[in-house]
Image (cartoon, rainbow, N blue to C red):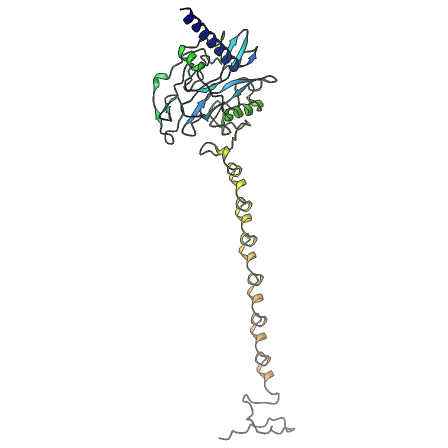
Length: 364
């Protein structure tokens, strides 16, 4: 009996030590000021079949205070694992940050209602089935024309723990304690946030518009469709004033940020220079000029210029000189008649008599 009691005591000590070690690992930051309320935002549509939703949360920077890490769709580290969100809890006069983790069951996340399946207890946004993740379209935003692993369960649309939009557990926030199944989940093997998630949070810490001191609880980028993808504001529109992701990504789908740089630029930037200029600039110079300018010089001049010199002059110029002169000029000066003198006959004698000599008759 004493031996059994001793073994039980050792198990309790081991369990307590594990709980403390787990708490020390998850409790990484302690702050004297409570985090701001959770911003209300629209969830982007799931971009890829199998991605899991990680809700946004307030992180802390020692120099600049609280900043918002946008909610984002990410790939699970392996099939069958679910995400337990991070949360803030009031402990010993300070607000401690408990990092999120991956596990086969959902652990305690302070009872904070993050929405979209994370109502404060467990997760109602989907489930694993046969190595594939199924989405509950009653609470998560999924394009059913692209993703077909879906179902509808409206019974999870409820707030298990409700206290406005509080982002922490404790006085003035959500008052909740871990349930038995959550305690079991907390003690199970965990997988830390993926490299994508770590980078996602790091990038958010470099954007001043994400800090509560600048946005007063309304971050420029409240959510993203994927890590490095498009940022969305609280209204669900692309956040063009945020440095997170690529606001100019293609509008027909997600992840345009991962396409080659040229595809994310406006069409005028990615096409060759000549194609983006007005038609008159893009075509060869000769094609864009008026018709008269592009033809050879000789074709555009008046007809008289292009024709041979003789053709453009008056008829009298182009004909032989004898043909253009009056008849009296072309005929011999002493010929009184209109008919020419027969070949071979001598020229008639001229006399002092002014009367002209009669022409001789032709011989037959």
